[in-house]
Image (cartoon, rainbow, N blue to C red; front, side, top):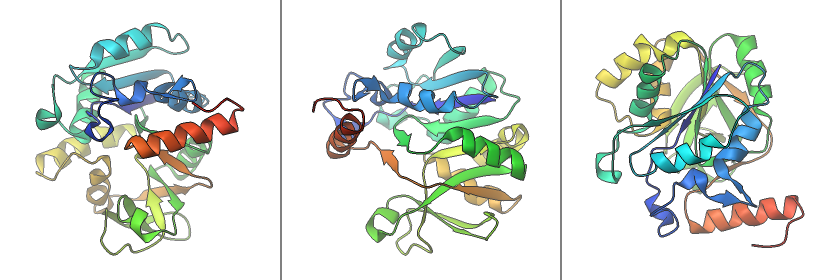
Length: 251
């Protein structure tokens, strides 16, 4: 299994913190966001490598970071973009990673700015059991927050019945973070066909409604929270939370 970390955004809402530093390389309670993501992801026994997709502005920062990590091979890809105006979008970056690194196995795809309170190894176990592409979902009884994320309706067995990105009227309380497990075959022709369809490829969740029309997709329902670091307030809140959890002094 390959872990693909989507890290090619420019995080303009976090300026000035991210003007000259990639968001996943910001520290939360003394450790970078991406290190915390990989602390969790590398508990999956099947993971054999990590691919980080970034941009021309931050590629060297990630290469320096990767040089100090030895657990599994880490490849840093530069997608060639230079600012928010010419970014490729998350799903085009995923295809770029698939092609550049010849990914022909299952892939855990995760945004580089989200942390989770559950074991990703449990997600991988669920994925193996259902034998289908999988997303994750957690209950979020807050309509305003649901309007800012993906929302799904689910069958009792976890099969996804519908998916909407940032819906004005959420159909359920099941929120979907940018965390996916894809079968190898899905990352080939289906992803290519989706990108040729002209659908907005910026949001990583945009692929899911397209897939639902063609094949089953299941959701792993997790307990606990997901921490999305999107602006200075959420960054400060997550840093304070992890410092308190880990017994560290306030930052």
